[in-house]
Image 1 (spheres, helix red, strand yellow):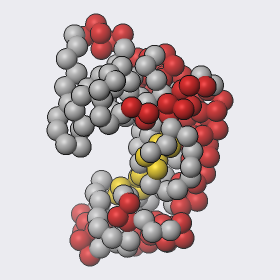
Image 2: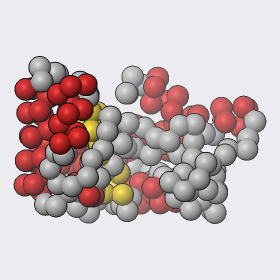
Image 3: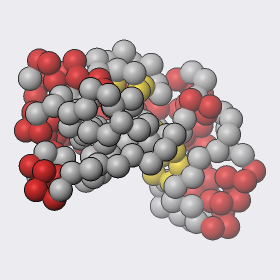
Length: 201
């Protein structure tokens, strides 16, 4: 998977697809201008793969809701959904997110966040997490993921092995979870294991 600069496929990206069989791209704000442009960009990317005789590309984006929305939808953050404790609302948020992404041509969402937010000093997770209860996180993140799948978008639970009890932003440094295995099994791993057991990607 690769990223690229600008609102249309660059020569470098075209070469990666045509000559090297690139299988996926990730879109960031630097690639997105307005909904029609995003749909056109995704169609152009898929046309590159088709011309190269490749299967359809995985086109991914970060669309969690709340502060991490590459496409403007205005859905609540995971923590707001977590405060309701209602998996039906999380499912509806996942379905709406999936509809918006599919309409734009995006087929992979780097969401939901499976981190258990147990560190109030965490500079990057915060309201991106469904809460500080591993079972609640698993329940609501699972519902959001099922909503995405129902609309044809592949969910990607993140950030294994857990980023909720760290105090370093992973965009700026390497976070460390200073806990023994039994604590990881009881807290951090719970949402990941639950979604895997449910058969979610």
